Length: 281
Length: 270
Image 1 (spheres, rainbow over the protein chains, first blue to last red):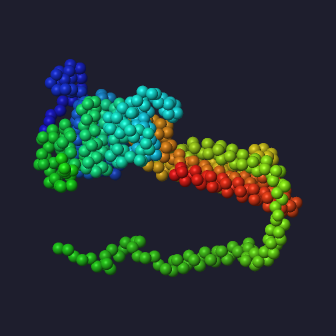
Image 2 (cartoon, rainbow over the protein chains, first blue to last red):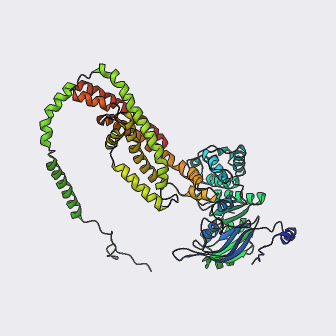
C-alpha cells in the first residue's frame, strides 16, 4: 500500500519533494472525515488521506460503499458530520457563503447524467462555468467578457466539439453532452475535477473517448482529477492511484499495478464479476 | 429446485391487489345523478324552461340579423381599448408573477416561512373573480379603463404565478446542482439553472392568460371598467340587438385571431 505524507508546513519540505517527484503539493486533504446520514447510514468512516496535485485518482467500490459521498463532500454538495476537508489548503468544511463559492469555482464537477440545461446552447452551458468570476449583476445580464467566450471555445476545442458551440445541447449525443460538461469544468479554470460515474450513461466506445479526454486534460493541464468508476479495467488503465472504499472505509489505496484481481475481491468482498469489466481494450 | 407459483396463492393481506368492488362505482354514479337533479330542481333550471324559451331565442336571433354594419366604426375604438387593457393587464400581471413564483417554489431553497404565506396570498388572489376585482377598482379609482386594467393585473398575476411556480417545481434539478458546484450564488443559479428551463412554460402561460383576458376585458365594461363591454351593455339596454350582434361578431373575430396566433406561438415554445 502506498504511504502518504500530508504536508502541513509546505515550504522547504515540499520543494525537497519536488526534486524527487514532479510535484508534491497536497491538493485535497481528508482529516478524520466521517459522514453519517440522518437515517443512520454511514457514508464515510474516519477517512484520512491526501491527494496531491496532478494525480488521477479513481475511487472504486460497490454501490453504496460511499463513492459518491466521498466525491460530493470534496466540494460540499454533501456536508460531512465530523472532520475536515481542505482543498488547495483551504478548509471546505469551515468555509461559508462566498468563501465556499470561491472554493467551488476552482473545482469542476462532472455528473453521470451531465446536468446540462438541455434547452440552452452548448456555449451558454460552458459559459455558465464562468459565473463565479463576475459580479452577480453582470452575469444576470449575460455580459461575459470576450476572453470568457474565447476561453469557452478553447475548452470546447480541447474536447473536440468546437463546431457544436451554437447548437442546442439536447441536439447532441450523450457522449458529446458529457464532453460539454467537461468543457464547462475547463472554462471554470478549475484546479480540481471531480467526476461522479462520468461514463455510466455512455456506450463502450464513447466511454473510452470521455476517459481519454479526462486523462489528457489531467496530464496536459495538471488538473487534479478524482473519478468514481465501477469498471475495474478502466480504473487500472487510466488511474495513477486507486482508492477502494467498502462501507465508507478506505480498504485499498495504491497504484494500478497493486490493484490486482485479489485486491478488488478484497474491496468488493467477493470475486470480480464479468459486468464490472468494460472489456474491448 | 424451482417451485411453480400458483397465481391464486400468497399475500392475501396486501392492499390494492384485488380489483375494486363494483358497488362503489355504482354508488358514485347514483350520487352524481341525484346531485344534478337536486340542483336542477332547486334552481328551476329544467329542460322545460329551455323548451319554453326557444321561441324567444328565435325572435332574438331574428332581431340580431342583419347586424348593423354601420355601427362598426363606432365600436372599433372601444374594441381596441379592450385589447389594450388586456395587453397591459397581462404584461404587468406577468411581471409581478415572476418574483412571487420564485418565492413560492419549494425547490429553490426558499424558507418555508416565506413560501407558505406567499402561496396563501396567491390562493386568496385567485379566489376573487375578475369582475369582482373590476367592480372594486371602479369604486376606488372611478369608472374607466384604468380600473379594468388593474383588475386584469391581479387576475393575470394569480393565474401566471400559480402555474409558473408549479412549472418551476417540475424542472430538472440536475442543472441547479451543477450551478451550485461551479460556485454560483442563488441569483446566478436561478438565472442559469431555472430560467432557461421554466421560461418556455412561463411564456406559454402568459399567452394563454392573454387569451383569457381578451374575453374577460370584453365584459369588464358591464361594471364600468372600460372597453367594449360598455357599448354592449348599452345596445342590449336599448334593445338594439343588431348592434349587439356586430359587437359580438367583432369580439368573436378578434378572439379567434388571438387564440390562433397564441396557440401557434405556444406550440413553437414547448
